[in-house]
Length: 531
Image (tube, rainbow, N blue to C red; front, top):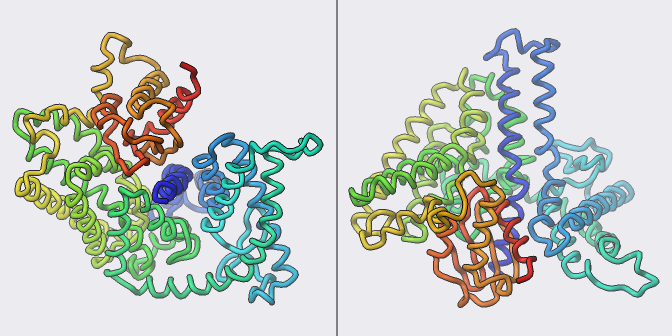
């Protein structure tokens, strides 16, 4: 069950990867049309204003169509075969579901407690999805319907029908089954979802006034659940769903960023819900403190090697917010150290919130600059400076706490054990080149590097006959193996540049990094090749 939930969470992350660029472009466009920053250039009707308005509206594509993106994303990650056809089936079935809901509400809306005559949006509980006026079930509804289609696809796509029904095989059969399944599901949605919307409205009020304690608990759960892959289920309803504000914190923050930047009222007063999107600060300010602790606790003769390992992973964590290579290093070596990290991350977020810092801060420094600091600096410079000061103080706290714990409990972080020098290279991504020296050059095509990595991983897990399922999330290659005893030790995976391996029975997670989509593609290609 846990393996299935992890695969589900990884698939949900597929569309989330699109949000960073879209968010940066929205932020840049908002900054470019802020009269406080660019003066008369931002007046409506100027060439400058018109250009950036075009850019801004195009940048909203991802956020305005999140439901469809999640419908598409799940089959990509979870369909066992014919992923592209599964995507088509999911989209058609999801649209069918919304047409059913729309018509039911139009005919019997009052029976469900819904005023269908209201305009979509606001507190109506309605939304336009692909031009269909329907209940706003958000990404929860999208994920639920898409998951049903993936189940139908995996079970019935390859089912052989009698010859006279052959035209209904494959995708047609899945869509037919989905069509009839959506009728009762749409009816139940009309009955149940308006009540859920009322409950969510009540929850919003509670969380919006829960203050520092609520922010601490939210951030702690978001961090501590990373090893399980369940952290997606914590932050997604807040950041991209309706848990505390309609449309999610990200969408709401962008929609009101100009308003917030022009106001002289405290940001916390303007948008108290923004305290539930401060988890990215641990990536920006925590990662350097952890890296410094690793460096200064390493043996002097090993520090140069440790530094070469730490620089790329720390820069990745700070700039882009991808922290798994660094966090999994000490997670593997000392799980309690990871728990301390989660506590510090939650405490940082709660402290920032106490001092009035809010916003959309789930990523790295680039997100902080473009989505938050630069747009609001003109009228909220004090808050930005307080944010930076508190963050740097916590960088020092991370360093002191981690250094103390590593020394006190003699935790074998990279470079500390003189008998395990290979561990220093664990995260350098150079072992594979050393192993394959003379069989290629460093300028080989990227696709070949990915293929060679994939070949090493395939061999390390016992070959293709030992593979049951293949999936990936943002940085991890997720595998289900038939016999865990055939899987080699972590060193075999490190030879291919892996940052480490998480093992949970038959479920295996190879920490690859941001190249994992390309590695997975080559991995699956190799599985198709006959001996």
